[in-house]
Length: 199
Image (cartoon, rainbow, N blue to C red; front, side, top):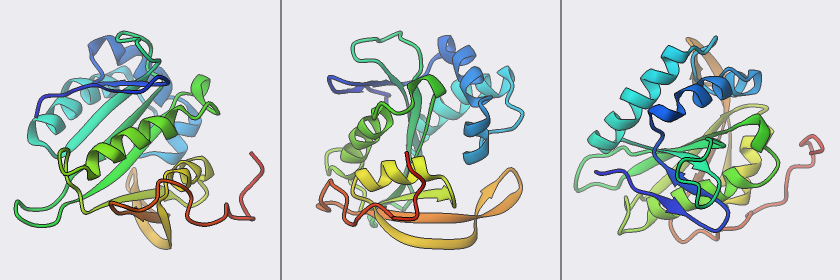
């Protein structure tokens, strides 16, 4: 599949390019990105090059992982504000599933941009004219409240916590998991947890 652009009046999603390597390296070296994602740590420019030059194009070519850089609207070459990706699993002729993932640059947090971007990607992923997924899953390390809030806003149903379910740099970690199926309302399906820290 050839990469394509998704956009609203608030965000533009386009495939990261070689011009984004320095910015990706800078953002992925942020302690919060390292804490909650599976990126290498410490993160180097070589890691960013491998991500942009191999992981991203290979995923699009094989139609297994679709990755977009989040940018300001109409800024085709604007700086990376975040990253959103969707994986796809399943054999042809069977129900397909996917997993949503994302991270946000420190200077772009708190503006709702990742929620907007992730909504675009989920909409495309469950559309029969897109990937036609039967379910999209979300997973985050226990304690990653910003990630959980994005999934909550998008209408993902929180399914619970699984012990040592996630893999992070060779260590098994407890994970929150959630799911979204086509025709679920695109709004929160339950109150925001009272135990969540104040924003």
